[in-house]
Length: 336
Image (cartoon, rainbow, N blue to C red; front, side):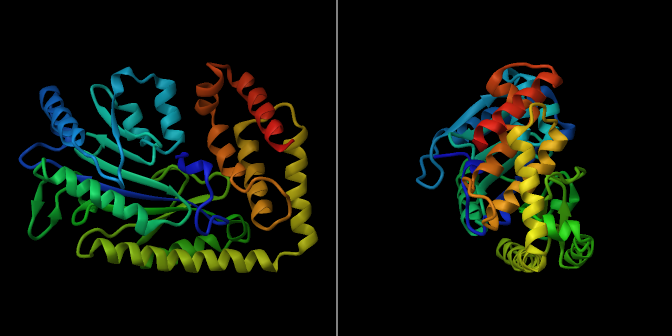
């Protein structure tokens, strides 16, 4: 099966991907910020043992990766593929990662919490992703006793995750409402419903290529189903607004914007990451509206594969200038 960024899912003109994260901690064990090396080793072994027997059709085979054996470049490439968080990449010593063959399932061990289950799928797939994450959670709980309180639910290192420990998010491509200035008011309105709008790599990051993460903030006093239903409801309103505003734009003006980006990417020889992100967003918009006839999955695939460390994963270590040349060539070849 392909990685999430190589496919177009439901509502794929706007919804790039769905991600479900579940935070769990082991009973009677200090949170990751307070554990020592011996405790970390015990947690690693506990998780290895718990995942070794998983043989579920929804989940498939899970592989354990010793992060000590992962180079800085590969760790950064994992961040660019949204497999791990930037914090886990930077603080991975003596830690393990559990990863499915298609990279749609990952479990970070001792990131912010002892166990961070993540399921990522292309397009709008909240129910499907949650069912997989929930299945993993249930299977792990058969071998690991999780920290739970009758009043506060699942206990987490950060109080904002208390309760369900669930973070559901959608990556949305919103170039039109970003450009016309209505995104800020939409984000403010979303916050009133317990949702937050963040940049491409989550909390504390900026948007790029008009991509934004819409996710739930409330985890206490609400069920997983309610959180997911609420997220989907608000997301569909944002999706409808983006589509409505796309339809209102002058057709010739929109075609001109898309074709200029297409021409630039098709003929350039040096392409910086910043310039690439700006133009590939317009290519995705053009694909979604039928302005240009290219593989609909291509823009998002390139968006991931042309990131700095992903290029180095494919072509070897390069200087920044050489990366810009390599990125230009890869994009040109895809547009031919």
